[in-house]
Amino acid sequence: MALLELREIRKSFKMGGGDLEVLHGVSLLIEKGEFVAMMGPSGSGKSTTMNILGCLDVPTSGDYLLEGKDVATLDNDELATIRNRMIGFVFQGFNLLPRTSALANVEMPMLYSGVGARERRRRAREALDRMGLGDRMNHDPSRLSGGQQQRVAIARGIVNRAPILMADEPTGNLDTKTSDEIMKLFQDLNVNEGITIVLVTHEADVAAYARRILRFRDGIIIDDEINARVRGADAV
Ligand code: ADP
Ligand code: MG
Image 1 (cartoon, rainbow, N blue to C red):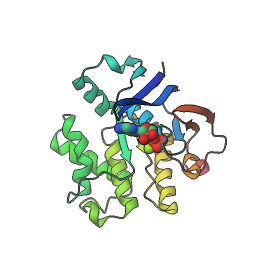
Image 2: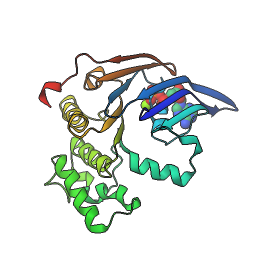
Image 3: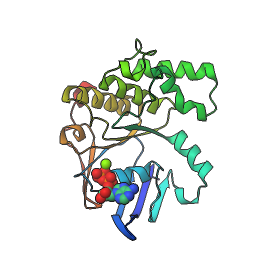
Image 4: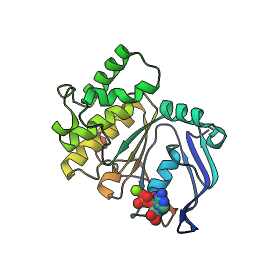
């Protein structure tokens, strides 16, 4: 059984009275422990596909199986629970709460998962330490660089110990050097902690860190290949 499976996914959006189909039958298997990059030009359907994989949106037709379970059979509560337990998210714009410390930002996802206050704090510290931010815990986002903010967001993404981390253009707002640092962190989480990573990017230099690269064009997957030259692999 695959960890994630999409079968003939189609997705339409209502547009000016009609329906615009943007995914035209996407099928995909992702196994536990993979590091997959979804590449393709702007508008090709990467984010729409990731939102479906992340249970943030639902397909118009086709099936999505998460750990073999058909997501369409879950009610909203079950879906929220499974999303919280299984999936961490990282976004291009970091999406941190302003005027809120790094520590409190990282504690956020645990507010909904029944972890006690003391344990929340302990795990948030641990996740921030893991991201090299041990000395920035009490800083709010406005006092952190872009790269530091994204590391806080990654700490928040892993703090629930979800086995899957999904990132949509996580380096889109960062310079090249900082992008490389962030990608090495993703790679390290994948290699050393077995976290399955699904990454959206339109940059080849960023996708190069993944072991598998999917290429989207016009709402379908046109290519799915193993990356024979993984970047940074020797450094992990
Ligand atoms: P990518 O992430 O590859 O840039 P998206 O998946 O965001 O592409 O978008 C694919 C297509 O779907 C684009 O043409 C986009 O304009 C359209 N689209 C995405 N979300 C919506 C929405 N909520 N309503 C209408 N159209 C949308
Ligand atoms: Mg996108």
